[in-house]
Length: 239
Image (cartoon, rainbow, N blue to C red; front, side):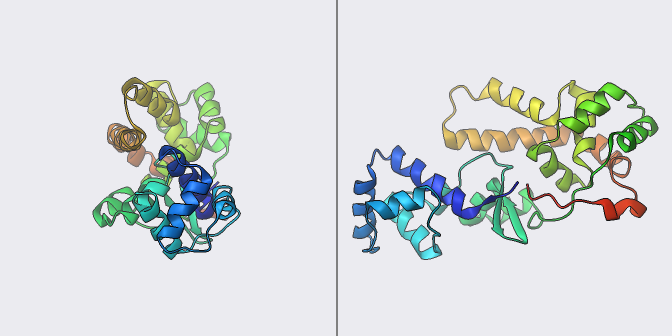
């Protein structure tokens, strides 16, 4: 499911405060010095548990107080979806790029706010599609269907197919689901990475996987999607 922006900012505020070695009282004092004179320790505590909605003005002042950029408040995996509004969800990487003013990076990551139906296919439908493409292994089909996660849904939206098909193609290529292969490569390269480097590395690996599977995913997009007459069965996923 998509995480509300309020909760993401709450986690970011706590992470930044702790990274600066500040107690909540000390953070509140810094914030007051920047002009938010009503902020006390309790205000910081409320903000860190998501009990307080942040205005854009407050986010900017908090960034100044904690010697950070607004993008630094957006924590989590690059493909984690964040809810800006009921009809507008963006991956964390795209939101960080947007807050950093890097429009080109935003367009590379997502052509539009991610809030469109994801095709839902049954195991039987996926098996039939797999047979047509020479991937008819019932064990792989079942695993591809059961192992769908946020990562596969995000890729499916980008490519225009179903998350089950993303997993099936990944399993056929690597004997691992998309998420498993991404995490395997990440673990092998991230031993000395800082949190910021880890975010960049995760995005790089995602693009690397897309490049390796691009032809198979696009060639199978029509196979892995629900047929037009079944589109009423689409389900909206808030990832």
